[in-house]
Image (tube, rainbow, N blue to C red):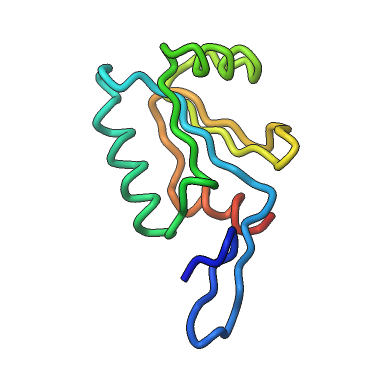
Amino acid sequence: MWLGSCFIEPPAVYMLCLDGMKVLVLYRPNSEHGRVIESFIRDFRYQHEVNADILDVQNVDSRDGVATASLYDVVQYPAILVLADDGQLVKLWEGDSLPLMDEVAGYVYNA
């Protein structure tokens, strides 16, 4: 169960707070990678019970997407970025080979 940015596992054996780390996905929805990335996002949300505050998805062709890609020097798409709460880049994956979902979750959950 989510309580703010914390996940509480009944019967409250542990409480996992996700304050601080965010996952940002930059991709082109109508590209050859569009379906793969959308499946990755859907499965990541389902398997790791990630809410919208933690996972942000941006179209790289949008104004925000272009600005974000420029800010973090992303040159290949799709790109998955793990960001600290202050916006500092923690980890970046670019290009065709996507990381394992557990690897991305490990950065977020071990913040």
